[in-house]
Image (cartoon, rainbow, N blue to C red; front, side, top):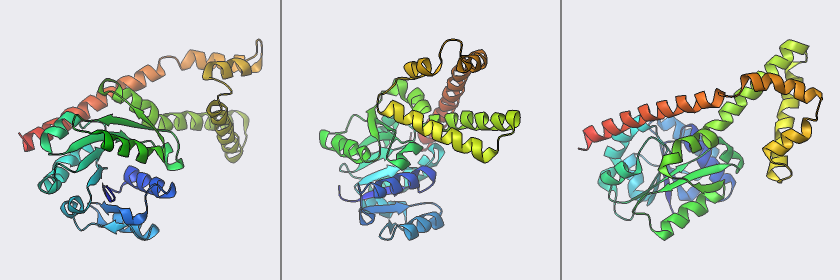
Length: 277
């Protein structure tokens, strides 16, 4: 499995490629890329000399025994039509999107399939990669995937039942927390007159320091809150506002993400089923 192909070099596809290169997990010459917009693949290859651009997805499948499918769920139909004629039982397909069911993918292709749901935190060779394996995966393929993603993340096995909520936390979570921190900055500016630059710097450094505390197991989330929030102190007064507003917010977040996931899954499944009865 010396060569690995990436179909799709958009936001997450390019993050994965650049993270794996930065971590020295792969060399540019081991990577073949393809994108429906050739200019995007060309820009990536310009930044990383040695990357090979495939003229088509079919040619990419011919050259790479391992394929990372980094396209949106509704683009799978066209992409699979292009690569299926070139697939053999020796290929390994790895999807990074959650709505595509592995069982349905297995019904359509002759090879082993797996899922790796990355996170933007992988760009810093940190965070989680959620891993799910299809029924045809053998031990060597499983170890290949786990070893590869361990260069840029903590690979974590996840069952289908908890795939969505796990993705909400590890993959969507950075956007959720980023939004909350931006609100903290904006309200600090509007309420006190502190500059946006100063509030952003203080908030960012606070968040980095807090992550370090958790990373070093110096505190857990509850013990950190308890240590900062002394009885009768200012922190406790501020927490009252959060206790009045935050509980239930993420229940609504998860309800909405699960509903959208179910909708996307149904659309993708219907489109693939219609094309491949």
